[in-house]
Length: 404
Length: 97
Image 1 (cartoon, chains in turn green, yellow):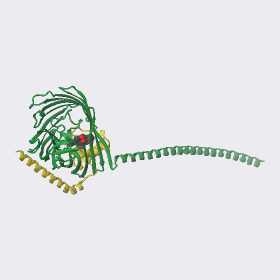
Image 2: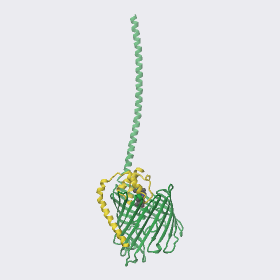
Image 3: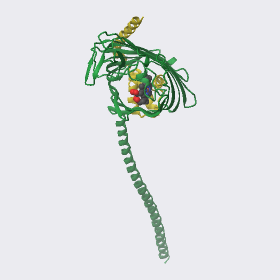
Image 4: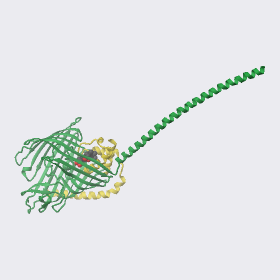
């Protein structure tokens, strides 16, 4: 009886304890399943994020590749240029609004060896017509670190104004100095071939040079007088001899001073007739001398130049006399520190064989620089003709110039 | 007096031709020293010195990297910069835009 009771109690005890054990086991398994579930969810979330990131990365890679291509292809293309608009009021005339010009500049560069640079010039005539011309177009070959060969139609490297100062956002006054306009004393452009470059010395001073051979100018006669020396960059050499010349410059960065010497020599002749049917008379000598400087002490910017074109006599010509066309100017600008204002004054003179063309000029101006390449200008030009009596040709010029 | 002046200039012209000739000889030597990548510090100095000779300084932020390449090569021709100065200035401008 006792034995029976004891074994029953044992059995019941066992059954109870095994039941409790099974329950803990289940609890354990349940929590494990929970953890696994959580892990699975995390894994799924991780996979979606991973896919998204992979997609983003490949997208960014594509973009980066596009950008690299854009940054470093063999040929680079860039459109630059400048334009200006304004108002001019001459003392003896009614003032007129004007559009000074729109000059897009194209740069096409092949690796670091070649560059095509071209400037178009769009203008509006008094009669309302739009004109287009090629300011310059050259292909430049960078031969080595010290020289580039430049071929085509280029702005004359003689002096500074025609090549480097005429763009309206650069010129600190709204007009060209007297004698430095088109077909006046300073040669404008030429068609030919140039070698140019520079050399940096140990002292940090540098020299720069431009040496050219080109078709040269032609003369236009009015009766027995030469009316102008035309230097638009002629497509034909009518005088049988090329013009050679160049400019040599030295730059001293420590004193912020640069000076240059220009020289050209060749032949020239008087052209008559009309386009397509020109004839040229016997040729005569042609020489150019010039010198220029710029200096920038403190907030000042001072520059000046002298240029002279000269042709010899030719007794068989309808306009037989020799002649000198010379011009000079000195300009000082002062930038008021902490402001966008700049004051400018320029004095200059233009001297030709024809008294009525001569001009003595003083120009003053105030400029507001919205940015260094966006300039509002107000200029006043005092023009005097000392050799043919005073002419009332003073002018007020207002201009907004943008270089881009 | 006038004739003398022309003679002086003509001699100058002749010496220039010689200098250009020498620059060809110089190339092989210079090629060795050539730093094709450009140097930021040298570029900054060359930029400050040279890029105000003709016009107001242009903000490096104005143009993109590729545009500074074409522009600086254009200016190399105008200003008579050396190839090394050009590479240095490009490096400076591309780092500062």
